[in-house]
Image 1: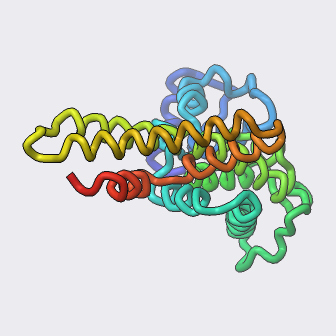
Image 2: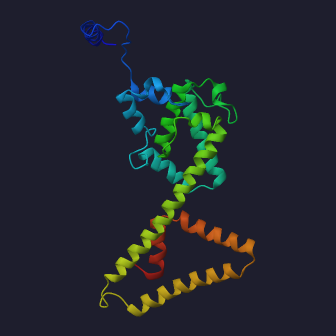
Image 3: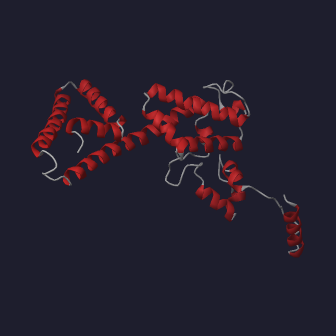
Length: 255
């Protein structure tokens, strides 16, 4: 504590005739989440500063639940990877951040199935890893994350499951956005600018191809239909906006 703060607190204690008190300069932003990681703390619960910190705490993700550049880069890598590759990427991330918080130069000591408690993590260190992972993934993560998923392997699988849901939703939104943009572009075209017959034929061709795929899936055996649907969904969900525009431009040309 700075001497000025200590002297000021002493003067206040003497003025108030306080005989039983504790004076401390606490970084609540760091201490409160760690102190309450496993259970609520009545000792701190009535402090206004602590209440504000706990209400706002989400581990370093942005206000909209997204991270910054690091999260965008990680999500881009995951979007191009299969499930096994995603698990490896996230396991490497967990081990690297855990090792750094522990003070190790490499992640070798952080074995995938070795427990965090066994590795020497306390509540403060667990919250620090949570904060780092939140910034890297853009996810809102609980302060009890390392206790709920007590090994790097278990934690990496949890992160992949959480991110898979968001990546799927983002991909679906991306496809819808491309279709909306196509609709906007078509509605703004003049018959003097393009060949309306050619555009109509190409749109009908796309619709026929899509409808045919739906019919084939409907008439296939259940397991085959599910596999085909999953494959088609995967292709659409993994397609970026640029890839969708490339597909449209191959069909219609640039207009």
